[in-house]
Amino acid sequence: MDMNLVLNHVDLYYGKEQALTNVSLQLHSPRVYALIGRNGSGKTTLLSLIANYRKHSSGQITLNGEPLFENSRQTRHVQFLFQRNFDEYYESGEELLQTAEELIDTFDIEAARRIASRFGLDLSIPMKKQSTGRRSMFQAVRGLASRAPVTIFDEAYTGMDAPSREIFYEEILKEQENHPRLIIMSTHLISEMEHLFDEVIMLDQGRVLLADDYENVISKGMTITGESSLVEKFTAELHVVKTRQLGGTKSVVIFQQVDQNFLQEAKELGLDVGRVTLQDIFTSMTKGGELHEEQ
Ligand SMILES: Nc1ncnc2c1ncn2[C@@H]1O[C@H](COP(=O)(O)OP(=O)(O)OP(=O)(O)O)[C@@H](O)[C@H]1O
Image 1: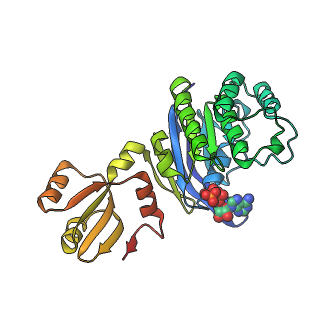
Image 2: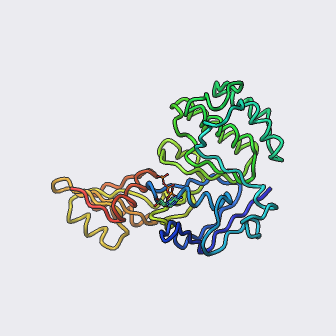
Image 3: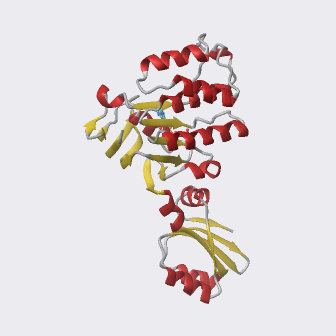
């Protein structure tokens, strides 16, 4: 089922504090969206609006052309998985999966049991007795097996060890191949999860700093290194997001689409042009403002 989620000039206030400002986004299936941003940038707030956990203060949020808030015809498409505290849950994982099967039309309990078994997650134990990482595994299982057309994972890996996270990523890719949908994942583990993403949304202090196709984002970022004055001259008109000075050598990160002529010219001048990762772009653009100087 095709999903089309649109946010149009959305603001969110907590009392007098503005957590989201003028957020406009268009998301659609089948895509995996990375939602990245520094602590307190508004990721969970944004996800909680999409998941109908709270109402936006102004603007519009629609799913498939209909206002989303308290609209059960559309909200039933959305599942939100976050680091839930299961301290009061005496039910076992299996019992909670059976409840999910009753409540969620698309839920596949056999898939849930299979993925739980891959994690080595014992579903017979009361959830309150599970460790933090295993509670996260359970949320991952529930989200993946929900097959919800809009599935949201808010830092779903919290507490999971590296092998378990690897299983989670493999299952995301498998699910997306067999049951494609709109998945949104907020994360701080950018390098580790980069291979999962089709799209990138970057928040900074409640505003959208960037929303683009992953390949576009990566193709815009590059480093240019060489003799200081040469680098300065060459990049004077470019969108420089980070500068690093090492003696007489300067290295800058630019974030801008450039053409082959540009690369050729850099080569002829003896400048070194290198690729950067999404994590590099993210830290360059958000570490203490857009332009970051390092000595
Ligand atoms: N329930 C709340 N009441 C008041 N302010 C809140 C509430 N929840 C979040 N905030 C504030 O809103 C802003 C955004 O918080 P949010 O939790 O959405 O950020 P985040 O990007 O998810 O952060 P993190 O990466 O640390 O989880 C922060 O300034 C936070 O203090």
